[in-house]
Length: 267
Image (cartoon, rainbow, N blue to C red):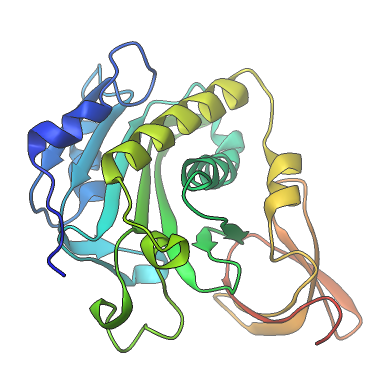
């Protein structure tokens, strides 16, 4: 099945001048990285709320320097420019707020899970998408942020590259119906605007994220910058750290690559 390509004009249907995020959308048929382009816009005085979206992303990035597949017409690749009214010390709320917004945007299409720290999966743990956040900090100020969102929308069966087919899926495959990517983007910008309004008035998303985080309660293997820890994820810390019990110890991990091994029952 040929992918459905969106024109620049079609993507612009998600624009809403009265909304904090998405008041203006810059659409591309193909681009290297939406995050790179959004970072270039960040210095503009009126950049807050601008969105870069692409039908195809040829040099997308994931966490830890990985590439991110964004095939033409089969995914949502969008980056949102923020000039948050937050202190640098509060930047930790951004990935939690973004994850909740992505979850809310996907809910009308399919049931999704949040996997710490930045992945969205189906109920079987197959990856649907991820979030990449880049920040600009000066002294104690959070000067700007880019929230990059990549979601597999219409990859089905043989369309998915063989090397990731066993651990990745798409919203269309889970829901068994095509996905309206423009409507998905519109819901994402609605939800993220709401989340940013909450955090900027001091309503942290930690408790709501904790309730949605499927990693808590799982046996996990976590690769950090310095070691690999195998234990059980038992909670989230005060700033969203993953709390893991292992070898009689308890660690609070602020970052890492997580493999969920089995459920809380040990099955």
